[in-house]
Length: 446
Image (cartoon, rainbow, N blue to C red):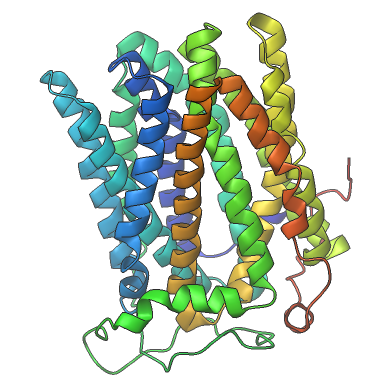
């Protein structure tokens, strides 16, 4: 099995840090919408505005963070972003205990957390590529993906129960502590990390190197290069000029935007109009996440058998077919069963797609462009989610949450048109890693 491959002590600490923060995030699933609905008595438009504004302003704040991260050592940046998220989230239970919690504070915290998330992901992707050999990237990304879905399976039901027993901000407190523990884990990785060197601006190459360097270039200077105005757009220039990454970039931000735009509306529909309890809300979205674990475990075997491009396209098409079913949810047991079936199909396909995409993206990005490229990708995704969440909030207010959820599902059916349809010269030059035969999951599909 792929999980048996040893990737070293330093990767073990990185994985442990990721795991503890992932379980904290899973435990705090939907915490902000729940607090807005149950504590501040917010309506659909306000809940959507909370999700949209936090992501939008966070993405704007993060625009200079990508280039800033690129020219600094990545591990200290990751620790700093973890501590920033810890401090921001801890302010919510503090304000709640004093009776001072407000909608405005939720907005500010969501902005800080969103910006820190983007910077952390940019630094983490670059650090992972320097830490893990190219042939092990799919295994490493598969482990992260498996951890994410395991945490999402276990966390939300426990979080829903904790809210019922201890109050609505309990899960926020636990999520904050998880970031503190993550920072300590990343700190424990140890080892020297060279300062990145500035290179001349470059557009995406016609063909990427078959074996990217394992570590980023170093410079003899003790300080990081100064940020330049042109660095702010370098990530987008690289993505949009790259024939292999461009269609995947466009497809991913649209799909993520449409899926996430429905999330606060599902909270309003289930917790409000259909009368689901918080633990039921957590359960129906958590239990199907076992499909994400299954999908991420299948990914290395599928890539070895069918190749990266075919797996990306097939799982990308399939993941767009499920969300429209959420428009037909009903109260009680039939509604729970329907949500579980739809979510199981969706997250299984996402579980296959995500680690293959993450590996493909790292393999096709030059080492000295990774942080800016990942930052641009995350900013675009956050901005798209924010814009579509705001639009879908207005649509739900004008019609109903169910109608808006149906509209998102119908539009998702068209998103496979954005996926790449044929192999480019760049893809041919960078074959996907092939795990050893004894490390592959069973070659079974369907």
